[in-house]
Amino acid sequence: MKKYIAIGCVALSTLLGTTSCGDDFLNVNSSDKLLVNEYYNSEARIFEALVAAYDPLNWLDYAWGYSNLSMTSDIMSDDVYVGGSGPTDQGGYHRMATFEATPTQQVASGLWTALYSGINRSNIVLEYIDGVPDLKEATKKQFINEAKALRSFYYLWLWKFWGNIPYYTANLTYPYLHEQNTADQVYDGIITTLEEIIADDALPMRQEVQWYGRATKAFVYMMYAECVMYQNDESRYTKALGYMKEIIGSGKYDLTPNYADIWEEETGEWNQESIFELEYFNENGARAWDSAIADGGTVYPKLIGINGLAGSSEFQGGWGFEPVRQEAYDMFEPTDKRRDASILNFPEYKKTNPDATYEGRYQDTGNFLRKYLPRVGGNEKATGAADMNYNNNCRLYRFAETLLNAAELSLRTNGSDAQGYLDRVRTRAGLSSVAATIDNILHERHLEFVGEGKRYFDLVRSGKAADVLKAGSTPYRQKGWNTTKKWLPIPQGEIDSSGGTLVQNPYAD
Image (cartoon, rainbow, N blue to C red; front, side):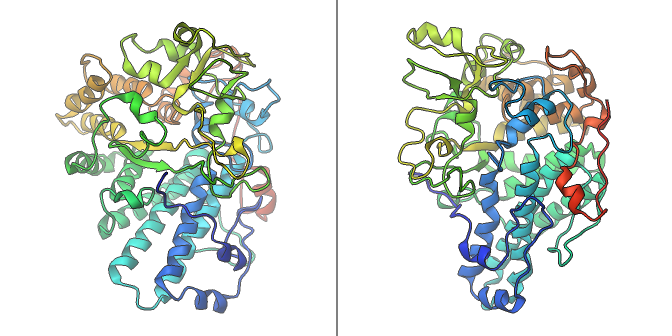
């Protein structure tokens, strides 16, 4: 059985009005400050608040509308289609995939609410921790830095999706409105907070097994590199490279020898190259359609599972979303060990599973994201809805990304180590060396992280999006990407509730 940190939404925090899970992220319930201060009077109770700040991480596979974090990114890339029963099935996804999202038609709006809920809960820890008596200084510093790391993670995704958002580090008071910050201002807030965490040096490079799922120095370093590289902040490239080298040199992480092993349930989770994962569990998983933020598993495997699957002893069926494009399968060399570990090509699968059949749905390609397909037995012993309680952890940061970040940053700072870092990743994949160039490193990222929510943002930050994602780049994409598509339209409910403080992002043809 899994060991995990998430112990659920702390009921008392909801009672005291310290959550924000409504349609409007600014709709924070008022609370009796004296009562709250009196409650947070011990290490155990401030730890409850910290656990509550972790909890929204587990909402990011669904967020009240199937807005899975990686799928929401990947459907805007060149790797997958949306699928389902047709263009009106999860229509917001289809509009995002064709760069026709609107303020009212985008699945990602649920993520807005989930991410700001996480920010609210992180700020609660920071607001009340000074009033906790007899808290050891080392423990206090650790809790503060965990809360700051979580808040930075939540803001990082809001920044990547919407850019120009309200950024605040103390929870709002009535009337719960905050100015809209520019994307550059949000970046400055995230990156300076990460630098504060790094300077404090209160987090371990890797957690002990009983605390897997809690923030680490390596997690903070990976966020730092991601922010700096997405912003193309050349002034911080050297610093980001140094942090990647520190992870590499720590001896705490390494590549898992067999790439396919990464994606095994339980045995592959928190493997030696895993830096950060979103934790899900099936046994006693209580998530249900009327309780989507309860503790438990993930609905994502069911969402992308093979429709009408029969005759397979390994996988369960699902709803046929996120079929992988043939072009993504074909980009791999036949000898690349990552291809068949990442993508299930059904004609190939039938060669060893002749009784296997399925019923294709809209945009069917015969290719499916094997990394997260629902495994047989993966939702057993759930007490909630079986479809919502699969056991697959979501891998967010892996050591392979550390190596490829280091390779790219080394080239961008005229370093000499890029080739070695790139070769390590390719050797694990069973491939020979190629020259360490920016284009080759970006292509290696494409191969390594297919279906992990990295590709779209790599195209944007590298300046390749307009060409790769142009009109006609898929049979369904009549409009292409342009610079106004970098950020999604802000959900209309947030615009309406903002009292005029939020201005809509441009999203033009």
